[in-house]
Length: 356
Image 1 (cartoon, rainbow, N blue to C red):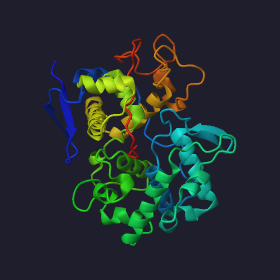
Image 2 (image 1 turned 60 degrees about the horizontal axis):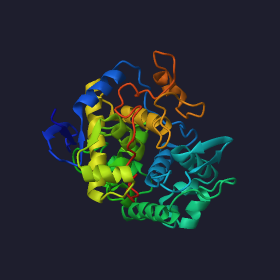
Image 3 (image 1 turned 120 degrees about the horizontal axis):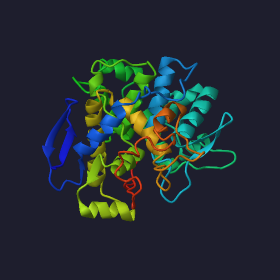
């Protein structure tokens, strides 16, 4: 069958067109199989594990704006993953990053001030995410500090103290009209990704926390991260058409900026298509499903195609999806995954960036 590449247009709708030899394309047949599987299940609503109880709406908004800006690669190739203890719980990756920053902000709300962001240093970033037992695991604190300083500088240029002022300036519009939230966020270095990973993630968090309501909610796309790239490449909803690019992925070689954008855009397009095919029409809800399953069950080295080990970190609300008809708990998507039981399995592409 011909591969159809879906492109997420500024209108927020998916359009189709054949792109022979494109680096990455959406496989509509594999999307259909996955959509049928998802449609037969009850999918949990998208939400974060912490509700930021005790934070005002303005404080919560600035917290999400800050934590998303610095959120990328917490499991870098060749380095130890970000993890540690917060409040008596051992956490990894984004869970540790957000919980650690939340704990620091509860001790000192000035951390949520743009004026403080403008003076952020790499040393201070390392301190914020230091674990007493494991030490400093956060990759590139100097680069992350630069992103935070830029947040403060751009906020100061507009005389903004809270992201609530962006929302008012955009009249609650995601990406229709001018100005809109996507345009305003793109003024910040951390949010100028052409595939809008952090922008969509931040806007999803603000909606899920019941802080913002959007005038054009159908324009809110999914925030594609590296776990989702890995999972969709393995399931086969996204396929690599360029043999040279596929060889790069298998060998773990770095891709170009153009290849990175093409791969992530194809994954975004696949999720948008699945959102329509399933009838959910909620890309953010699918993002949380995919992100939680892929980071927990579809790991780089030991995916849970046959069964989940006792150490599986799939959040409890998604566990019923992982219990199959034979009573075995394994990856919820194993029955339609094109990589299950096969080798070699693709992993996410390597590209040095702070976009995700």
